[in-house]
Length: 204
Image 1: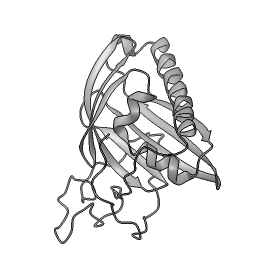
Image 2 (image 1 turned 180 degrees about the vertical axis):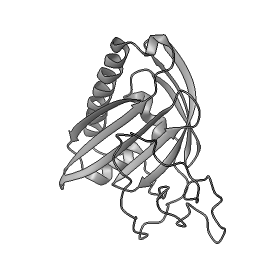
Image 3 (image 1 turned 120 degrees about the horizontal axis):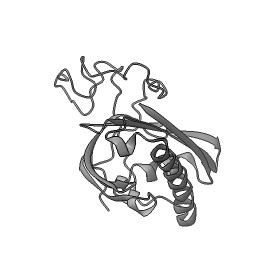
């Protein structure tokens, strides 16, 4: 797995930066090569993207999400990829947003070093465009404040109500752990429950 990381300091409060990142369907406005992102459910998105002339469609599942802290995801099928974005309050009006991604190259064109450099450059530019996007607006385009427990938070059950969480699902007993050798940061602390989900994730 290839690992890529980039951080950017944005001049907005942590809540604003986090809220904007939850609006996945706005990603094409600042992410190069992302043609569209469709919200299927609160935890699943469908992506159409193109990198280095390779066009891909794939689904991604959110594996952990805590307001103002982190959003983690992984692809459902090949090409295998996983990522996490974390939000760190520097002061009342400044937030450090750090994106880490792991990607399993698929096919010869994606195994050459030049291709990895293209992806690194694109992610760096995407983060800078995110900074410009949110700072120029002065506020978020929407927000979803729901919480998705990580696989280590057994029994917490995303949106489970009184029903048990099935194994192999988010919050379930046999959810796949992070792959051996992963360089992504560890899951966040057990979240507080003082901010329940505020309705469905908005669709722009």
